[in-house]
Amino acid sequence: MKTSNHRLSRDEAEALAITCLQFIADEPERLSRFMAISGLESQDIREAATEPNFLVGVLDYVLQDESALLTLSANAGCDPASVAAARAALSSDRQDFV
Image 1: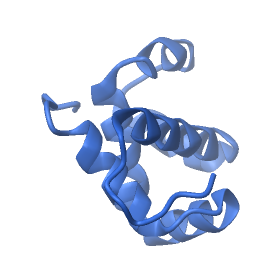
Image 2: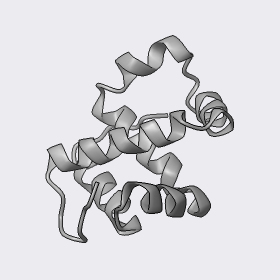
Image 3: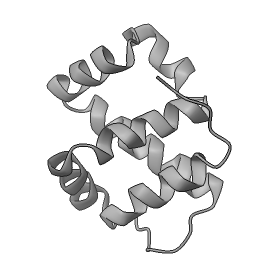
Image 4: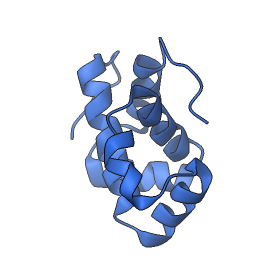
């Protein structure tokens, strides 16, 4: 996913957040840590992924780990700043996730 440093639309931000979620799910250790922090069970992820607040939490999780952020950016072909831009786009009407 190629994203530039411009302001992202809500759809672009949601797509990038889903890319981040897939990135988390691709590595068992990262997924396990995410599940522990979020308090979710594996069967709840698909439903939770439809909630904007959940997607902000996914972006927050990636943003707090520089190594994960850089790996994700390299794998997805996006600028690391795009993850922060996606978070800003989705959090405009956000209520606390955790």
